[in-house]
Length: 128
Image (cartoon, rainbow, N blue to C red; front, side):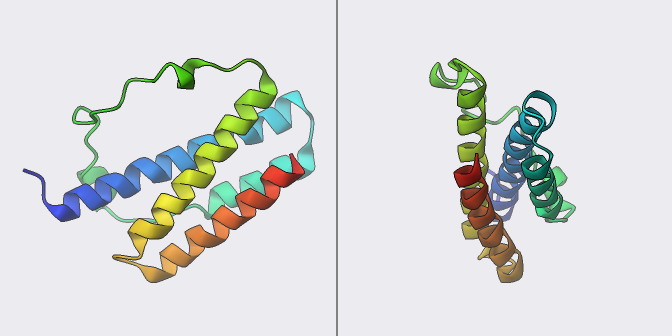
């Protein structure tokens, strides 16, 4: 059985990846499809701030043990570019919230960073 520490770092690792991936999808849509350099740049800056370095992240990564790694049918349904943006900005916001909460247990300063990131993403969503 995995230790609580391993489980916590696995949770943090997955959500750091999910956060940066979600931001990147929206950033690239704005950059390459919509030619919106201002919002793309804001997202790029947020993505670069979304860092938490700790060797235990990779140490406790467990892709094989992920009980929900398969996509759900709703994750596979995207009708247009707007739906891609909407799904991925929400994905990023949710991940930022998980990071904010989880990091309260080990690094309150990092937790505060992800709270700030979450609110920046809310503001960017409004601008979308």
